[in-house]
Amino acid sequence: MRCGAKCFVVEMEIKGEKQIKSVTARTPVGARKTIRGEYGTEAHILSVIEEKKKS
Image (cartoon, rainbow, N blue to C red):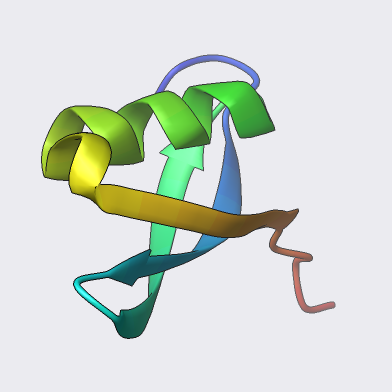
């Protein structure tokens, strides 16, 4: 994990099917970049939300 990294929950749609995936990145833009690198342009990203830590 990189310094300053957080966990983001990415909601996306691939081939008409909604999926939720947890991604570790520094920023929401980095999380989107990770998803696009993994799934390509076929993944339509609906939302990127920072996962809050339970305390």
